[in-house]
Image (cartoon, rainbow, N blue to C red; front, top):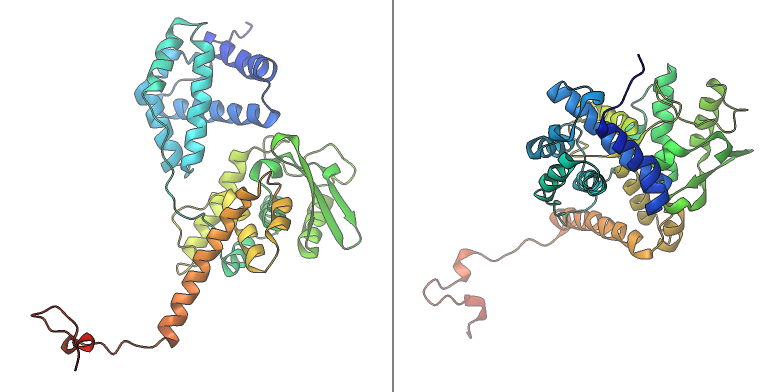
Length: 342
């Protein structure tokens, strides 16, 4: 018997493969991000409500279910507010498309409108210290294909400052070996490409990984694959990252003190360490593939917080101690004695 998808899945397929690329004209990576949203949502509903993807209807996507999904993204998957808001935006976009094509979809959209986007706090970006990066990159052991893959992924992320999606999209033809020089052709947001050189150690690790996977001549093959798909997803990178952050926190309780680290923390770390090493901000802008210098400027603020921490430690160790005591104040007049005329 031929499988017939539900109306929900039929609309979702039309939304992802026809409406978004043809009518809206969004980029390939945007479509991919939307697909990730619904793949994760279907997995959540299957886990929480025990409903198979082929049987899901719009009535299953009520207010409490969507609210629970967004909370699950933050608490269980340890995603940030930005990711949570992106998932909500993808759901809202689909609801707007589906409401004129399905009666129950109108209720789905109505429930989504009740859920606001979360506001971002002004806290500084999360990044690793140099010591933490060295320890973190040595956590995966290269005694197996999976561990070698994970070690290579984390090392390339730090060496190149690439986003998780850019790592997933990297193909063998994008990797150039020229003696001791290894460079990557990275495709970023909006299809914009940039050439990035990586250190010898990371280049050697990457070359060894490609050789062991026998991918050297498979130019259109993706460099990094999951155990089930040739083209790795961002979610897979997030899981890899989450695994080693958990190990790092257990093995080094005095370090890795931030509550949440994400794959983007590695990109923040690269930029921050480059700034601290004196690399001009314009060079970092081009290295990271930022369109605007303002996007790169946020790392200068993160670096300033590091400077403040070291200055505080310096003052505590070498600064002058205050000689002001309680006797220097006249408690009745409220005027310090050292300010009174003798």
